[in-house]
Image (cartoon, rainbow, N blue to C red; front, side):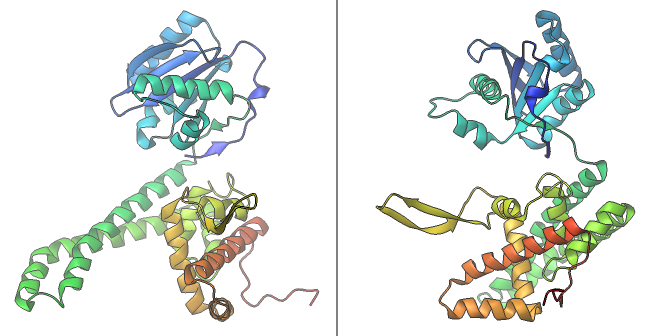
Length: 347
C-alpha cells in the first residue's frame, strides 16, 4: 500500500465521524464514533454487496456527507481491497495504517478480539485525526508489477526447497539414494525454472511498456550492485519514489540505518539497526552490496579498509547498502544515470 499526504484539517469543519474497521477474510468488524468514547459497532460480510449495503445504512442512520466520514483500517493485504474499492468510488477518505503503529499508540492493553480491535482503530483515528494520511492506489502498472514480483519470489522459494536440500545432502547420503531424489523431482524443478524464466520475461516486458518505469529502472540499475529485481522492488516500495523521497528515510525503512541506544550516563548500548523494517528489501540490498564490493574497485577498497580498522563485516555491508541507496535516490532525483568515474567540476 502507498499513501498520499493530505492534512485532514483541510476537511470542512463539520462534525466528523471516525470509522474503525478490523478486516478479516470473510467478515470485518466496524466501529463508528464521533468522540472516541461512544461507539456504534457492527459485523459486516467482507464482500462488495454487503459493504455497499452497510455504508448506505450507516449514511441513512447518521445523515453524514462523504467528507464528514474518515475511515481507518489496518493493512491486511488483499483482504482490504473490497472495502477500499468501494470507499474510493464513493470518494470517502480512508487511511490504511500498520497494525504495529495502532497498537503502540494505544499504550498498555488487555484482551483482544475483532470487536475491541475495531473500537481501538476508531479511537486511534479520532486521536490522530490531524496526522492521518489518505490512502491512494498505485498506478495499475505498478500493481501488476508487484503481483509478478510476488509470484517470482514464491517460485524462487519453491525451486530452492527442491534444489538446496539435495545439493547439501550429496556429501552425507549414498549416491544411489541421492539419484532417486533427483530423478523424482527433476520434472518439477524443470517446470519451476521454466515458469521463473517466463515471469522474468513478463516483468521485463511490463517495464518496457511504461516509459516512466523503464526510465527509473535504467537509472537505478546504472548504479553498480543494483540489479533489475532490486530496482523494481525499490520503485514499488517507494511508489515510484513519490512516497519516500529521501534516501535516509528509505534506509530506515529497509532496516539499514543505525540508531543510537543510550540513556543518561548509565546506559551506553552499541548503535544498531531497528528490526522494524522491510526484511525482504534489506536482504536484496545486502546481496546488491556484496555484488558491488566485488564489481566496484572503489567499494572494494572501502570495504577492506573498514575491515582492517576492525569493523564488523555486516556493519560495513550496511554502510555499502547506504551508499547504494543514496546513489539511486540522487540519480532518480536528477533524472540521470550514475557516472562511475564522475569527477566534480570543482576538482
